[in-house]
Every structure is written in structure tokens, then in C-alpha cells.
Length: 226
Image (cartoon, rainbow, N blue to C red; front, side, top):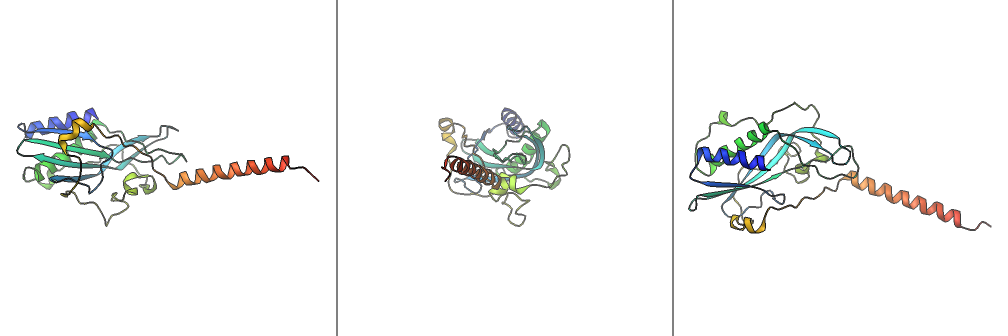
């Protein structure tokens, strides 16, 4: 996360040195749940690499989504950005946790370039030429199709691959969230959970069947024969 913060601050200081900006990771961030004066930006198609902590299976994806909530206090000349990186599950494991993607420095810069363009446009009213927005997908091209059953963004209904006709709007102004003044008091949110998928249901069902079979065999073994 430190690399994200450093690159973001460098980019903002270059173009708006008079304003102080802060970037914070918030795993509890929800799409379309915004406070007064906050805006939303969903970065789609970022390139990231994953590795399962249980079986060590590694994979890459060009469909990593990053959600940003943005607020600029013009009077105090302070800006805040909260971000959530959507995770993916391992295809090889039955009992799985949602794994965090890893990004190379060039891919972090590309994502933050897109974020910076959106801030310049929506917070400062600056014109942004379409050709100046950098491509976000970089790295080894992945030929595997996107597996929506393993995608946290798809499960929440914000992944454009699964919901091409229901994509989340780039920027929205909304109603409720923690004020930026309370960040220092509340700290960084760490609400990291796991997805409950059909594979986990299958695993639990198999465990129940196995236990039932063992109990049945024990019952037969200890039942007196006539």
C-alpha cells in the first residue's frame, strides 16, 4: 500500500502543490454508498497477479477492479481518496479465501494516472482529452476467460464482464460514509472476509456425507447380530 500512497502523492503534488491529498485503503468500501460531497470512480481492467496462500496456485487477471471514493474540501484545500481492490478466489481449492492481487509499479502508475485524470476533471474542472487517459492493462496478456464465479466484483454486481449492460457509473455523488476528519481516529478499515461460493457448499456437503457414512458403519459394527 505504501507504493500506492507514494506514487499518488507525487502525482498530485506535481499538478496541485497547494492542495494536500491523502490515499487510504478501505476494504469496507461499498459501491454507491457515498457521503455528501464525495464522488466515485471505478477503475476497470487493471492487470494483477494472484497466488493462493493454501495451494500456492498462481494466476493473473486483466479484470481486476479498483473502487475509489474521492472528496475535495476546497476551503481547507485538502483532498481524500479511499480505495478498495476487489479480490479473486483460487480455482484449484474447495475451501478458499479471497486473495489480494499484486501489482507491478508500472500498473500501479497506470491505475493512478486514470484516477488523477478523473480528479482533475471532476474536482478541478479541468478538461481532459480522451487520448491522454492511459491504458490500464499492462503485462503478460492473459488468454483465459474471466471466471465470474471466482470474482469478488462479479459477486457484488459491479464487474463489467458479468454485467456489461449494468456497469457502475464512473462518478456519482451520494449520501453516507465516514467523514475524512475521523480517519485518524478510526484508522484503516480491515474488513477482509471470504466469499461463500458453490465450491465451499460442495465441500461442506462432502464432509457431512463422509461423517454420516462413518457413523453408519460404526452403528452397523456395534449392532449385535442375531
